[in-house]
Image 1 (cartoon, rainbow, N blue to C red):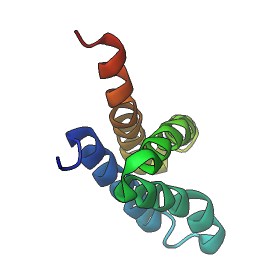
Image 2 (tube, rainbow, N blue to C red):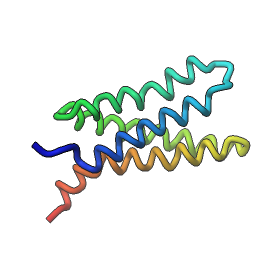
Image 3 (tube, rainbow, N blue to C red):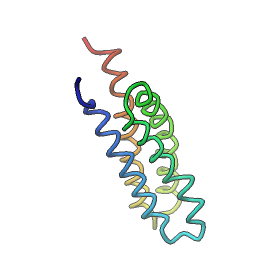
Length: 114
């Protein structure tokens, strides 16, 4: 039995990093609990699905990619409208792109490989 695909490992690391990023970003927010539920919890739930393996991992990767589009849009919006938070926003943008690519990679390889 083979181990996890490299794309799933990259996806798992990116989801964990995104969740940590949100926890640090919203640490001093006055609505911290709401921010953590909206931003930090979804990547952790997707990570749990990716770690589970099988068809659950494929579904979790798909939904992580869909959520990655939201995270990307949020990062662009914050980087544009709040220059004081641009560092956090750019980290979110980069991590969301990694999530999108890593979650889509097996499907892209199956479609366009050989």
